[in-house]
Image 1: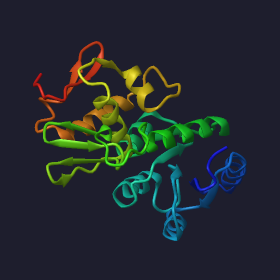
Image 2: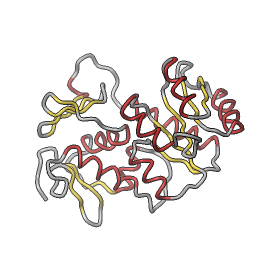
Image 3: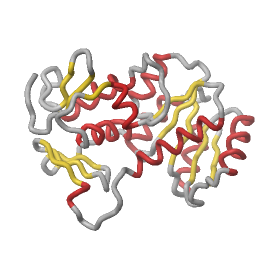
Image 4: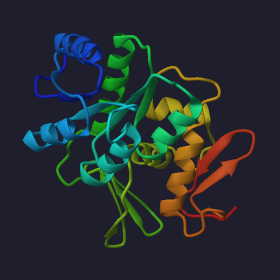
Length: 239
């Protein structure tokens, strides 16, 4: 069972889905709030703490992609996106705007539960609180990655990262100077089954390079290892 103070917000215009998920996730120990559109979602967010949002892509008014993009700049909450279409391009766009995961409809509530737990584990990070211990801090180049505060700074300026980008960077810094396949990276940041044609890692690498590389086309930190995947070199080497 989950901690009773873990609160989920379901944003879906289908009342049947809202009711089904509310009952099921409530039985698993979560506190659950619901909203039928962006306006109702904003009202719930203004009332109190939400730990994760389950967000439908197709909503009346402001759609899920626009909402996900807005949430990453305003609340920086983890988001699991739902879509009846389930097309690969929708999934890629969803991840690009900051969603942590993407689940096509119809889906099993048990699968959604597994993904919620995986996202919440990643959100909490693998390190236990340890005062001001340095074990939660990784440095590379001019950057300082703090796992406890889930922040990245370059000198004195914060570098904004989506939850997905942060999780990928954390996987890289914890496995430096090692060629990692896409499957390994997916395992590090997701922990559940995926399609062999999953392109989410490539999307996130591209976006992460744009934020930490001076020249994303000639990266110093995240290198493509052809036929394998990617390698992170904290000392900074050009391809």
